[in-house]
Structure formats: structure tokens, C-alpha cells
Image (cartoon, rainbow, N blue to C red; front, top):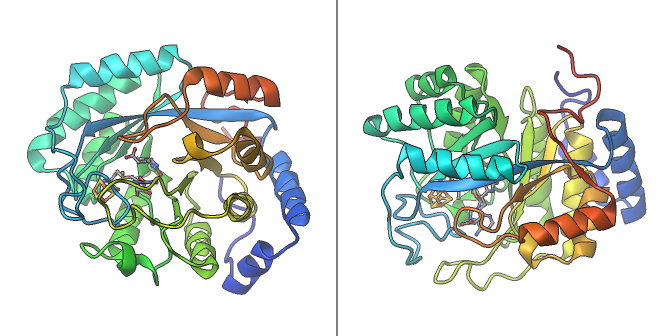
Length: 326
Ligand code: SAM
Ligand code: DTB
Ligand code: SF4
């Protein structure tokens, strides 16, 4: 189903951002409860299937071969290892398994293994997601035919600020891949990172771009920069947590039927800030103690937080989205 509010304009989105916080949170809660069963959180598990040595120069990333990060490059891991990790994630309660590779784009020779990974994870009864960089139509078709449910490809920031963060590709290249993924009928997971040195207007523009996609991304990850040693953003000034909460609330209001994921950075957030993000309408997280390379809260800490807040984990795909047309 597509969103009810379309054609977000910058001024309307900026006005939303500037609301008194309690008004913004109240609106976000109303939208959330109109579209989702409250107190229910979707959980995804990430696995890095190919780590380091990436040909892109994203200033925030530990896996670039070009930005000073020193993580060694590894090869694409074995299909059997992926399936072993997926089973463990499923036993721990995750419903979606997201496989990420540090590539500009997959090579033809990688495609058979990627197809086997999707088929294998799917056959366990989990939702599948991949994030592999740019894709042409042929590769998208192969992944779709294997049963890929979601493709993650973040726009990360505004078009204006993008060249300050990444020089090896253009914002428009990302939008093109996203369009091809949507055209093939694969659901889109796309969001961004806060704390890259961008200003409020960049955050507003990023959300307007996402909300005006047709349809809006089914899944919207909002990451807080986790500064990585030796990268250009290693000493970036942390973003104010209240500003982070505002962006989550805006994403909820502007993309009412999308799952909004409180993504990287939870390990650095207090329980109170995470609770505010859930109040603002975040209804998805990454679980497990590592993201791709960086740290994430331990399962016990998440279980304790969920118990404290009265949150329950979704057990079936989109079960908390209201009025799902079959
Ligand atoms: N290489 C693929 C790509 O860039 O599309 C997939 C993997 S990449 C690591 C996926 C996303 O993780 C990035 O687009 C970015 O939004 C997020 N990310 C990467 N490093 C991060 C960091 N240090 N802190 C927060 N988010 C980060
Ligand atoms: C997304 O938006 N965040 C995830 C996932 N999509 C691929 C990745 C976060 C990466 C955090 C840094 C790391 O683990 O290296
Ligand atoms: Fe490569 Fe993705 Fe990291 Fe950019 S974010 S350097 S594309 S792994």
C-alpha cells in the first residue's frame, strides 16, 4: 500500500522539524497508532558477508580501502556459514536476515553464491535482505527470482551534502539503483546517517527525498554515526540525541506505513534515548552484538529494555502493520 500523504515539500517538513518537541512526538504517536499496532518491534539481524577493502570512499565507513580505515579485506564468505548464522539469528528471534557486502557492486562471479544465500535463508522461513552496493537490472532480476525480499541502499544524507561525504559515486547513482530495485518488485530499505557534520536542512531534505519515493521505502533505517578509527569522521561532533529523536518522529509522520528502524548507534545511547525513539515511532531495530563491523547492544540488554518498556518483538512479517491488504 502506498502512503497517504505524498509530495512532501521542504517547507512543510521543516515546519514539522521545528514543532515543540511534545507536539511533534504527539503527532508521531497518532500516526504510528493509526498505522501500526503499538508496542511491537520488528527485529533484523545483520551479517557482513564480505568485509573491508571497499572501492568506495564513504567518510564514515570502517570498510573503505580509500578513506584511511585499516580494516583488512576479506573474501565473500561460504554459503554454509551464512546459513549457520541465519539459523542462530532465527533461534534468537530475528525475523529478517540482512547480508551486507563492502562492495561498490557485486561481480558476475559472485552472483551464484549470492543467489544460494538468498534461497537458503528464505528456505528457513526468514525474510531476506541484502546490501551489496550498485546493481544493474540483470543482477536485480537474479536476486528477485531467488526470493530476495528487501534491498538496502541508503541515500545517507541530502543531495547537497553528499559530495562532502562520498566522492566515488553520486547521489543520483543511488537513486537510480533504488528505482531499478523498485521496478523489479523488491521492497526497498533506504535511510541515512545523522552526525556526518550535516545541518538540519540536510536531514529535512534527506527525509523529503525518501518520503517522495513512489512508493516510500518499506523500511527506513536511521543510523547515528558510530565514529570509526582513522576515517575522516573519526572525531565528528556527536549529534544531539533530541535532534536524533526529532528526525525519527519526522520519518514516522512523513512515511506513515514504513517501518522506521533505530539502526546503528544504539550501543552508545541510553535506555531513555532509545525509549524516546520508540515513542517517536521507531518500530524496528538490529539485534545481536555486532552490526556489520561495529558494536550493538547485547541480547540481554535488549531483553531487559523491552521488558522495562513493555515492548514485544514481532514474530511474523509485517504483523503489526494495520489493514494490510492481502
Ligand atoms: N556497501 C553497501 C552500501 O554502502 O550500500 C552496504 C553496506 S554499508 C556499511 C550500509 C550502510 O551502513 C551505509 O549506507 C550507512 O548508512 C551505514 N553505516 C556505515 N558505517 C556506519 C557508521 N560508522 N555509523 C553509522 N552508520 C554507518
Ligand atoms: C543500515 O542502514 N545500517 C546497517 C545496514 N543498513 C546495512 C549497517 C550499519 C553499519 C554500522 C557500522 C558497522 O557495523 O560497520
Ligand atoms: Fe563501501 Fe558501503 Fe562502506 Fe561505502 S558504506 S565504503 S560502499 S562498505
